Amino acid sequence: MSRPDPAEQSRSRRERILDAAFHAFATRGYRDTAVDDIAGAAETSKGGIYFHFPTKEAIFRELMETTADKLVARVERAVALETEPVARAEAAIHTVLTTFAGHRTMARLLFLDTVGAGRVFQAETNALHARFANLIQGYLDDAVTAGAIPPLDTRITSIAWFGAINEVVARWLLADDAARLEEAYPALRATLLRSAGVPESRIGEVALPAAGWSFPEVATPKSGSGR
Image (cartoon, one colour):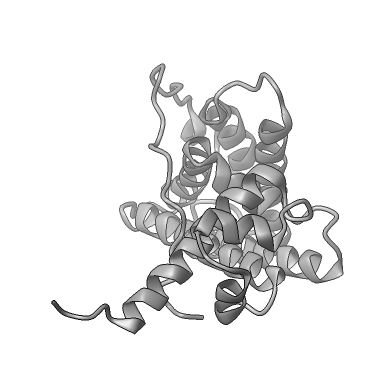
């Protein structure tokens, strides 16, 4: 019988820690989650956690980074399917909303769990928001270059777009009886496109998703990188 591979065991334990932390933070919030809680759920010791992560903060940062990476990758895949500049911007909005609609724990991690957690986490959150705003700005720049929208300050517009998306998602997360998040897409899309100067004839109308439609629940982000 072959002996267990130590490297594989270490990798597996690290993923269990991240999986346990992901659900603990989403359920209890960062402040109310203790390292003991994570260790118990991951079926390891506190020492096992500290072998991979020096602090609870390090675990949270890892989760934020890997979760954001997955969302950006999903947005980029959706945008790559479109060739028309405005359609690329629409694909980005739609992908973000529909992803969070089916991945509520992901949304909580990115939008709520750093609120009030201190300056370090606020800086991390600001950097994360800037990353998404820059992504949107790139699509708006392409639309301006192609003549699909009039010249405008794409930096400010992209910040406003992300701010609007952020507010819609945050209110959905906090509401006790919120409607399906994807139902906000048509109105949000129209509002954002108008703010960028897209002609009314191009905006048109978008039908609501069919009843019961949603993305399946996302699997907890796995590190894989050993960061």
